[in-house]
Length: 215
Image 1 (spheres, rainbow, N blue to C red):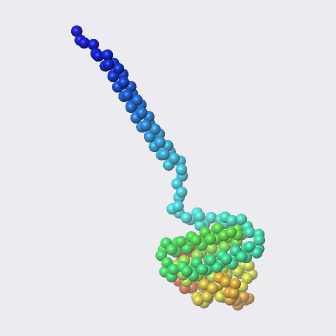
Image 2 (image 1 turned 45 degrees about the vertical axis):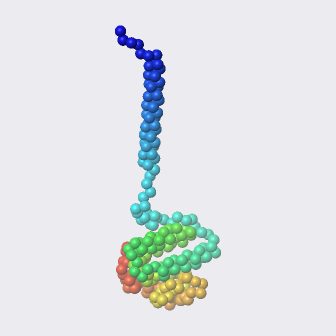
């Protein structure tokens, strides 16, 4: 007749089963928790839209962002400071820029126009940019173009125009209060001649950009 298990056998078996149950349920809960975290992470990655920075055309070609600026004194001060910055950038642009540098300057000019703190001024300047796209093939072409569009703004406001025919004076135009400008019919005639040269691509290196694509 088989011998009965010792009294402690059942106690040990019960303890072993209990320990196995605890370990099994703990591992199962951990795996399920990790799986839930992974699913949540995947969902978050799917739900968050990616920021598309591959194309900046929409940002540079949009309409003016800022509201109108009614304070004429503030508008004049803003204009003087902005033109000084604008011409200084052109004067320090590389003589022989890389394609990336030319693209950067072109996009900056369009963003400068769109984000200009005077809304009506920004809209007007954007219209000028559409008619006379930025010329960014070199420092000289950029500086000459900047002087020309500055004069376009001055003509629209009935202000004197600068003589941009002298390359050495391109940086000075619009950059200080003591600028030498030439007003009256003579100055306007020079601006018209310069406009014809830009359209014809006769200014220094401006023909490299092309009027239609602006560089």
